[in-house]
Length: 237
Image (cartoon, rainbow, N blue to C red):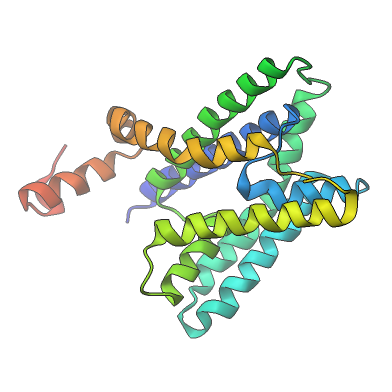
């Protein structure tokens, strides 16, 4: 892999991480819950307001990295896990940055809140799309689901990922009920995110092939190689 190609993938991944973080902040400001990936940190931030959502995101992400190490054991990719540790801190910082940028923004009318969640879902799905085409590493939430799918070989990743998201939502709701008597970071916005983000990301993959080619040119070459059987040296453009 060429140096400039690695840098390009890193930049696209970082862009995706920033978009995801800003979208989580936007959805959170709607006060209708958060996406599954942030449901536990958000519930904890409501229970312990002295720490921010970003702070708890860092702690939770580091826990997921540690669990991957436990689950995979000798199979664990130490370099990838090291990258996820760095990403955990960046992810948390980006979330707090997004909330700071949004400031006092807080829609009061219910339909406006729903619209904010839908817009946030579109943004979050775009961030997921950017991260996947970057093919650089995973955020800890995705890495944890992947580690489980490796350990439970009979179940495909998408099934394990759904189960992982549902488990996170349930834990966040339990935390909220025990500590505050409500569902904490889990509300209808959480359900909307869980139902829509994957579908919207799929639309991006099917409609934004031109953007994928522009952002990651080598990916198009790899796809062409897989189709026509030529090697990388034959693809001069």
